[in-house]
Amino acid sequence: MVPRPRLRVSAGAILTGFGLLVLLVYLGAATGLVRDVGKLLLILAFAIGPVAIVGVLVISERLARGGASMRLRVGTVFLVIAFALLNLMLVVQQTIFLQSRQFRQEAASEAVRESLRLVFEGVNLVQLGIDVSFDIFYCIGLILIAAVMYGHRDFGKFLGGFGILAAAALLIANLAAFPYLPTETGLIDFGPVTGLWWLAVIVQMVRLSRRERSVVSRV
Image (cartoon, rainbow, N blue to C red; front, side, top):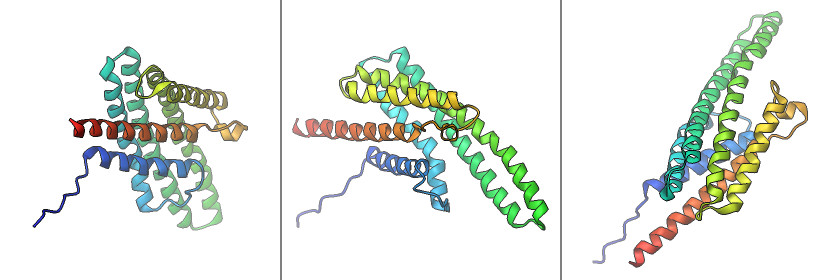
């Protein structure tokens, strides 16, 4: 009998698939396509930070093959800090949202619900402040990593330049709107644009991995 070929799924393929999934969750939430936060979506949202940190380290390792520059090291550290802050922001945000909703539902009177609403508006500013801290580390880290990509043969000027411009626009919009959100002041939120950049980077990483496996199989 001819043995059946085994389906082999590499750790990189699993990470890529999960990374795409959590990235789509982020894009859906950022663009308003995903509104109801169920348990599964909540878990995926909380996974964005940890998965992104692993992804940043994988990308940084590839970029470091030609030599680890200061820009690459600082950019990597800043993005790791940024995605840790993102996880903190999401957990604090959803804790505030879900608990406040439950408190209002259990309120004995309209006066109590109004008081809870005012408390919510004050407490909610905490996660918004964490979000700005995330944006600062995220944008600077992304600019530095994209600058390394700009001169790297595996990524090139288009990906590098697009990343720099998108991150710079996001940082400027957030600092100009502070302490409000960019959309609250009539500015554009460039967060989803940087999400599309990450999607392009993941696709490129998959292409590079397939090309390398093809070369190895021919040897």
